[in-house]
Length: 252
Image (cartoon, rainbow, N blue to C red; front, side):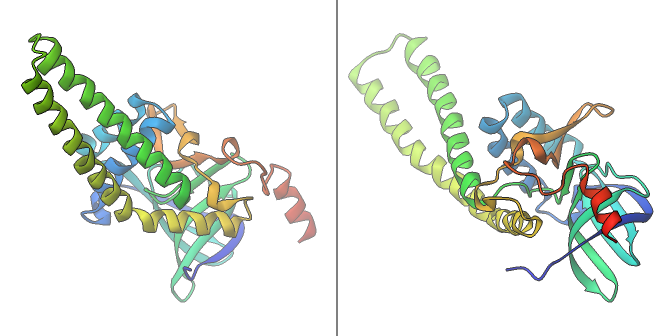
């Protein structure tokens, strides 16, 4: 259990600075590439390909957010910060200094967007299922390519050739799935953090939530954003409908 706090209010001051994922450390590319495997089945192959491209070519440009909410100085890094001054938000954060907080997520009832740190967005159980399913899809693609290139095209159906490639494919399956499982385990802490965020927001069945199918498309940049979600499309009950803001400010 992480020592986080939940607070909400209007953004009294907002600064957004551009950067790259590398400022978070060497794990950045690994997070993006693993996300590509997760999104292959949940979204589409093209979505996964775009994610790999971001990691290997553009290095994933991100934005650092500095904002003031009720006197609290909040700092966070997101793929894109689709936030505005005076917007009402609900935040999950860790206090790192007196009155200074590191943001893990920012939810806007007005826009229906949930910003999370890159790599977050899926509970552990559905993330594992998706990772394994995505791994099997990539293996199946490789299997078909090998069969076509080394068996069908050369028209070599000899017992020796079939035994050779059959043995190789059998062995490769276990090696490949071992690599996939290790990639998943390296990201497990992100799933655990995501699950705690879902619990703190009061989402139903937080252990079953998988937001990667609800990633937001930035029409201006022509990108499907990493860990910025239209969360209402992926949960059964929304504790923060658009009327939530008026209700809270009326009560206060």
